Image (cartoon, rainbow, N blue to C red; front, side):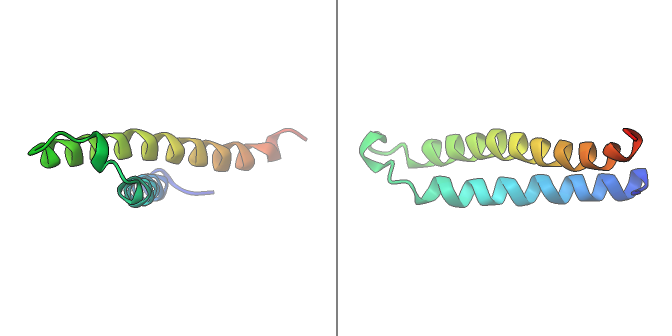
Length: 76
């Protein structure tokens, strides 16, 4: 069983990890045809925000599965 401080560190690490993975996936997609000329910075900022939203959601899902798995011992 993890303490509150340990769980916080695991959660922070998980969020950063999944945001980074999502960012790497998003920048591998060729979005050049849909970007207006001179708007590359804005497009990267948008991709970064999308990476935060998707990565945080995946991390929350992962952390909830881990927590629910730990709570299964109370079932029996």
